[in-house]
Image (cartoon, rainbow, N blue to C red; front, side):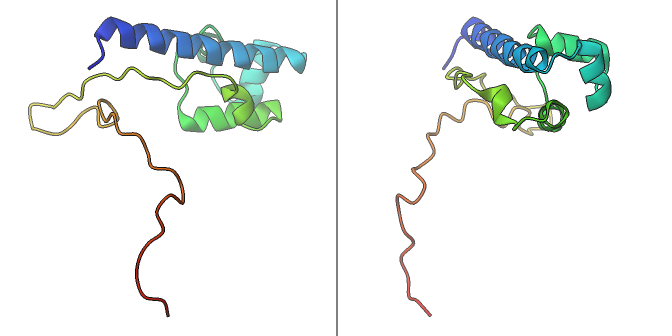
Length: 121
């Protein structure tokens, strides 16, 4: 299990790398933070925090930013490290898993590695 400090450090590196990609993509288009935030309909302070690696974008925000930049979403993710550290899953007082993505530690199988067995039509 990962230590909390290792998880926080890795997350911080990931967010800084994303912010750097966002800044580089914005500067390549010669547009200000405020202008791009307006185009993407993202609050300018939130946009600035994303570029500085202080906030984590949601999926919708990632897609909207890429669209505003006129770039594929992968441009903003290019070169980002795959996180290796995970937070331990936590349970609420009602027994529900509050952090379902954490602690899974499961490596996905190769796509197409196992073909389904069964009769054909």
